[in-house]
View 1 (cartoon, rainbow, N blue to C red):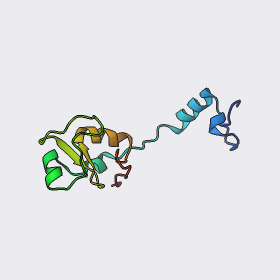
View 2: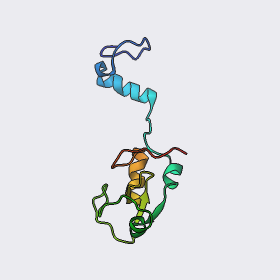
View 3: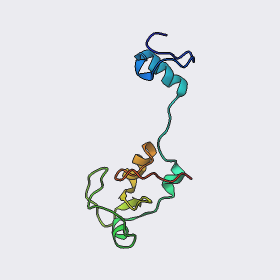
Length: 111
């Protein structure tokens, strides 16, 4: 196969593959999820912004680092094991794609 080797002889580098060869490889391998499981996400504590600040000593700014909206006291936030917190809805969506904190890159523990 020109531009790469998908025949299994181990020769060739992925950066030498043609677009078509890379697409074939993607079809063969399939999608690989780098996100956290729904169980792992659900196991993270969810509290109000006010509670995260006052009772959990969460490392939380005045606005969500994901959506950039200012927090209100009654906003629901999810707290990571590293103590960073973001809007629960924003963080859940983030973690489904990438299983690490958007601030410090600490990973969510697998369940």
